[in-house]
Length: 260
Image 1 (cartoon, one colour):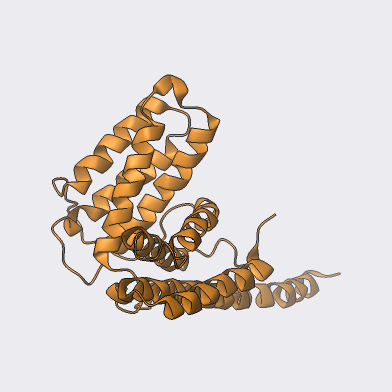
Image 2: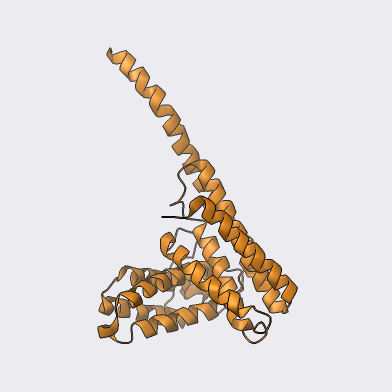
């Protein structure tokens, strides 16, 4: 085969792949620039901050004794740190004002450092101290918060069923009123995780995959937001409808994107 023929064959093979990659890049750019609904409509800041405090407390328990920072606690801390990063991302760009909003980018950065600490308890404790400082509103970032890929998608997806299980217990009719604050926080967390996950294309191999992923994330976010609103209204039928929608959104997404 002569040089010209080889060149022509290479062009024929490369152009479809290049076009597909361009579509993926353009689709991702569209996601990055898309404005979500008002965050307060699916994840009120008060509910998210309650969950920030919950995860800080649980991480503190995991790191209380360096000699007891075993594999199970390291695994839980990894999930909790990534969840904190996602919550801080959403809080940093929230449409509701609260005193600590300007420190949320710093909290997100510290949560990311905690997630990267692995089995190093000293490094993890240093990151935890930075998280605590940011939570008080003292440590404010110099730049404005913005939507950007944050946290390990795999870690977030492992956290989702754990939060979902707790939420299912909390919204049972005999517990709905008693555990309203906790359930509102958990549903807001699921909505925030879904919004943050929308910015991560790790599971998308094609432009069509990416479109589906974004749609699934949006449905999970809106379903969790529906539960959140119903919990605040103490409306059992609406809670049940929202929980059914949330479960369906998870099942549909798992059918397409569940990782082995």
